[in-house]
Amino acid sequence: MKISTKGRYALRLMLDLAINNTGEYIPIKRIAERQEISEKYLEQIITQISRAGFVRSVRGSQGGYQLANPPEDYTVGMILRLMEGELSPVACLDEPGGCDRADRCVTVDVWRQIKEAVENVVDNITLADLVKSYHEKGTCEYFI
Image (cartoon, rainbow, N blue to C red; front, side):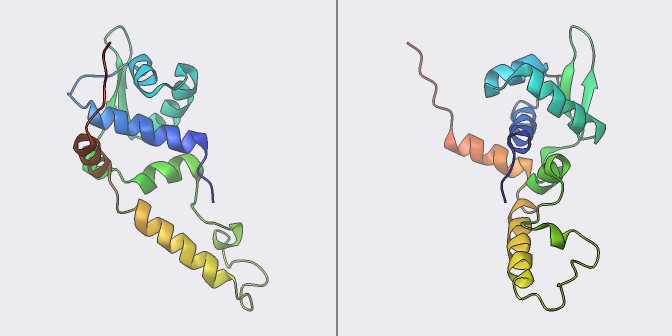
């Protein structure tokens, strides 16, 4: 299983909003600069995130985005599933009833365990946890 660029950037975008959560709306341009991601690409991602109700937006010169809920309300799993769909290593786990071989397939248990392990990780890490980690690591900024 591989997380796409879209999924990774969506998580970075949401984390940026959480880290910079001052109550003010943050322009997508500022997020793009901080994250070193194309503004056009972030606009596509934020549209999907906004439609899901994860963020609020305001248009205009003072416009931008902010989290719709506190950072502790968002898990990494919620954000990745929004962008990636299910996090299964194989498609047969997502199909109702599995596949035609599910009743005699030995490897399906391996795939199920992998899916459960991934879900256990991503569903138990919140944006608040990531914000805490960010502050613990500190920022290394050098000015010359």
